Amino acid sequence: MAVSRRTLLRAGLAAAGASVAAGCGDSGDDGKTLRFAWWGSEERATVTQKVVDLFHTRHPDITIKTTYAAYDPYFQKLATEMSGGNAPDVLQMGDRYLREYAERNTLLDLTPHLGSAIKTADLEQKLFTAGNIGDKTYGLPMGQTTHVLQYDAERWSAAGAKLPADGWTWDDLREAGAKVSAKFGPKVSGISDPFGIEDWYGDWLRQQGKDLYTADGKLGYTEAEVVRWWQLAVAFKGAKALTPPAVTSNTTGTPFPRKESTAEFCPDSTVGMTSWDTYGSEFKLSAFPTAGNGIGQVTQPPMMISVAQRTKNQEAALTFVDFFLNDPEAGALLGMSRGLPANLTIRKSVTGSLTDEWKMVADYETLVAPLLLPAPAPPPKGAGVVKTQFQRIYDDVMNAKATPEQAAPRLMSEIQQALGA
Image (cartoon, rainbow, N blue to C red; front, top):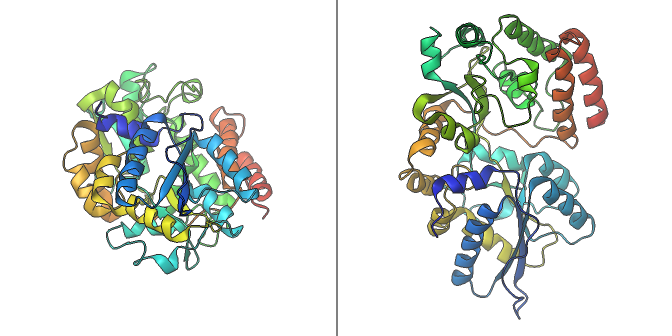
């Protein structure tokens, strides 16, 4: 049965999924057997296994055994395997874990093999920094995403709100959100509250020449920036541009697909999971408003592919990585299952036949590509805790239990503890 492109992308970016499952293949007599592990759903497993099967036809002397899991169980199991010296030979790696595992000397430095065993000429170069620590490369991009504002253009126009345009500002967004809320409220708000999401805060920081973390894994902002970001939230709330706390905190999806707001920030890779089914062609995509210099958005790999330092079959592992990233037939099978293909030649082929929401996403990526910054360097260990605390402490600001000036010092204290700074 054919797998639709919509199913592929749903599979590719869904964090929920399957329990760990064993793949195919028996150990080869010559010892060239690799374990390849990734996170994702059963649908992603289907297309990934097809690529593994194709690899077997090209390299019958190498056997690939595959395992997959949902995101959290995947990294829980990986931690046990790494500490026990039983890591997969080839593994899918997340940006929030790469620095930790690389600094523990568990990932292979791929630098000496780039351009030779692993071809990189056709890969999007802006993605590489996500897998680099200093002058060493520990992960290569398996796809590409960036951030986006999805908005209901029809309702914005009906409310007399100014539609997004090049160089629009956060003030423009606040005014548009307020007009929409006034027109369609109280059941529909202008904008889903974005101010507790560290990712969007990072875009805002980069618009002003800062970032969440520095290239060497240190915190890239101060308490003053947190205060300013949350003061912006208070201004949006005062204008009645945002979803109220009860709507924002509802864990059943997000407000925009529920039609409880008319605009929402998200990774562009998630656009088709919910919004298209709700809105169809009624909604549009826009780059972020700016606070100064550019849109602050980055060229982001949703995941990377790495090789274990202790693999006993390094040459075979590198061969598989190169095949996974660069083989045109493999790329056609993978489609959009891990975002836009990182290989630009394959991307052109895959996106040329897209329709509906995925064509919208591909067209948006093409439009903003010149404006996108390179991917950030891997964040430090503890960054995941910081992201959680950012949301938790903002909830007090959102619910008017604390002012930005009261909440920001608490966040900085939590950051210091999480990062050991």
